Each structure stands twice: as structure tokens, then as C-alpha cells.
Length: 109
Image (cartoon, rainbow, N blue to C red; front, side):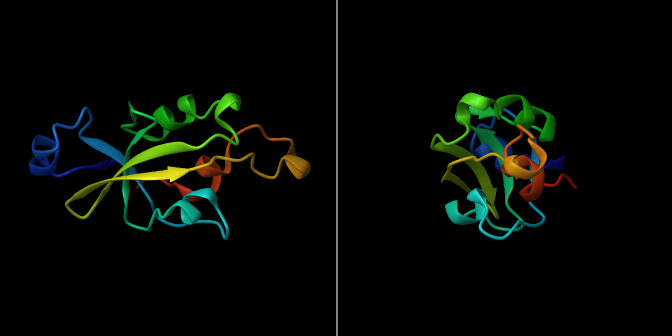
């Protein structure tokens, strides 16, 4: 979890004052393809606030896999919307049903 500056929270009237700090990505990941960058703070997923990784985990359900979704992101002092299409992470190897969006790309700080 990463705290957003109070000034940014007030300016954008954010529903949360923290988010998920993006540290790194897996090659060819949906988030990288969508334009997410290292240093971004994810504060929402499909119009739902995400104060931390647990919130994002709850929103990344089976029905969202393969469907275009949007991330609300703070980049510096700008609020952006980035489109991503979550996919299963290595289903053929692990049969894991979590999206690789949360498994590899987004790490809380």
C-alpha cells in the first residue's frame, strides 16, 4: 500500500487515500501493454476504489478475465485511466485462476 499526497486526494476528490504502488512488470503483461508504468499508483479498477492489493484481488474475478477493464492511476500529480485486459497467469502450468495483473505486475510498497 502506498499513501497518496493529501493535496492530490483533495484535488481529485478520491474515494481512497492510498493505492497500489507499481514496482515492476512481467514482459508482455496486460498492464504494460495498457500503458501502466513503474511508479504509478493504482487507486481504482473498473470504477471501484482500490486502497490496496486485497481490494484488487477481490475485483479480479473469473468473469473479468479477457474483458477490457480500466485502472484509475495516479502518475505524478495526474489522474489517468488506463485500459487493460486481464488474463489468466500461466494457467497451462499452474492452473492458477488469478489474473497475472495481480500476480506479477503490481507489488505493494
